[in-house]
Image (cartoon, rainbow, N blue to C red):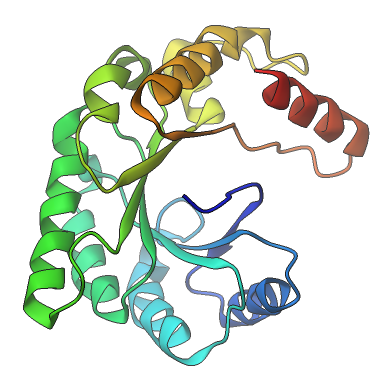
Length: 218
């Protein structure tokens, strides 16, 4: 399984940012570049992103960086259209947000398998990464981790999880301790990568170091 130490989310409707991210992949500074159709793209711009992402995947050089696409969650009603738009461009992985149960991953797995069969690609070549962002998702980690053979990693969406729980996000992150521990435990049990939560205070490099150190120790 490839390393996923640094994952950069890039709005799929912003070609300038996609081009800049691609240069970081070429220079070797990033493990993963995730072209986003979900939170990073306004609703009225999602159609633009569905056109632009496949074009970027087909024309830009991303170097050693893994080429990922984050689609919208199953609850949005937009996921099917997202998958139809981006799978033809053959990304290396699909990131599925707001996963709460096995069914949310199985739908995407089936769509990918159908595309692989239709175009004669190697079965299983496109990976899945799940993001768990709700209390229900944390409680269902066992079934999520076992849902698909193409699942390689589970990430924690701390901001949405805190909102779902009614918790207050703190600098120390104590409110996320149970969720982080549960994620690590389930990923270890099922042979998956555990991807820690996004660090949002871009001006606090010391806080980022502490957060990364805490995740490393876990």
